[in-house]
Amino acid sequence: MDLSVNIAGIKLRSPIIASSSVDGMDGERIVTVSARKLGASITKTIVKNMQTDVLPNIKRVRGDSMINCVFGTNLTARQWFEEEFPKAKKAGIPIIANMAGTTPEEAIELAKGCEAAGADMIEYPTACPHMGNILEAMFPGLKVPLPEVNDPSDYARQIEAVKKAVKIPVMAKFSSIYHLTCKEWAKAVEDAGGDAISAADSIGPVMDIDVETGQPVLGGPRGYSGLTGAAIRPLVLRMVLEITETVNIPVIGIGGISTGEEAAQFIMAGASAVALSSAALLKGSQVYSDVYDGLEAFMERKGYTSLADFKGLTHRRIEERKAKGRQIIKDVVVPTLVPDKCIACGLCRRACPYGAISADGGKPVFDPAVCHGCGLCVSVCASKAIGQEYYE
Ligand SMILES: Cc1cc2nc3c(=O)[nH]c(=O)nc-3n(C[C@H](O)[C@H](O)[C@H](O)COP(=O)(O)O)c2cc1C
Image 1 (cartoon, protein in one colour):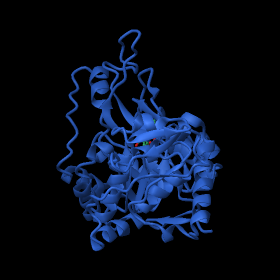
Image 2: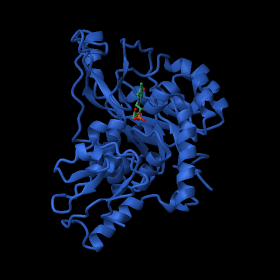
Image 3: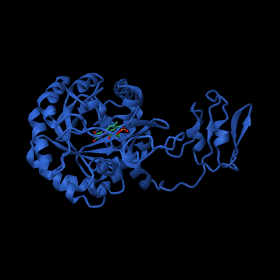
Image 4: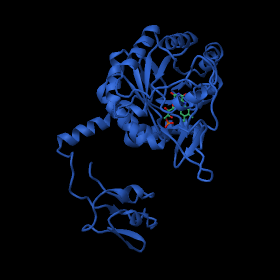
């Protein structure tokens, strides 16, 4: 089975990448996690001068999601160039430098430095949705404007400038805040010569509140942060679908991936590879290999021998809906039960918004006269005992 991929001319042995986060905080960490079946590692955002984080800055929120207001790397660009890149290169996999300048000139200088230090690709992030508030408190007098989400021209010019400054590929990284305009931004990046797009970074600003004290849970003036992990996966899946519909450059899908099947969803949406961070922070770096193994097991089960077999499958399914006149289905399909799998927990009955499920010995009985065919019972059933097929 072949799980290798090619992103903008860079060969990756695996489609699983450590996205820009704590696992890319320095060369040593990059080498350690690279053993987890990774195809590439992305550094934490490299900026010119050292950044000091506000504390606390990471919290798990309900389920497998998290909020964070972590800054870029805590090292200077010089430290990266002189010490961390040479260490990171020992990982033996491509190293992608995520970097940001405070001015276009600084971005060019950083990109050149990363390339000279051995980076295989540049990842250039868009605006971080929650940092303005913290930076304004840190540097009194500074005014950070709200991110521009409609007009991509300024960002595209920066991509173009960075592209001209280096020979290695340049990948744009979109924040989830661009979810409504991602097609326009993707087109602008492609037109500017960008080699790839990764989507997405966090969405925000968001916050959480400690109910005992009323305090925002994270540090900074208002506890503002960015939401990542499971909660953003459906949003980013749609972004990846729309971006890959719009441009021909490769896309790396990032957002709430914690299993091989979730990685497969992104490939089906059109991504060429995937990256993750929150799951590895919440469960440990073993998750990277678990996602790889899970993807391989999924492919085996489905009879796929390469990622190309199902890359963009969802685009084709959407076309099929149109061709077969199946875009709007109004005829109810009443769920069916596999009794042997049912553990009689009663959750489907309690969840049914229409009162269409009664119990027979604890197991559900569906009333066709009342069932609206919505599908909720199917998705709440943990033992996968309820089936319902609208599409083959
Ligand atoms: C603690 C933490 C730190 C992060 N730091 C960065 C960063 O420095 N630069 C960046 O572009 N993205 C950063 N990200 C965003 C991730 O790279 C990724 O895009 C996002 O978390 C969505 O993926 P996930 O749901 O798998 O975490 C960070 C995410 C987390 C959770």
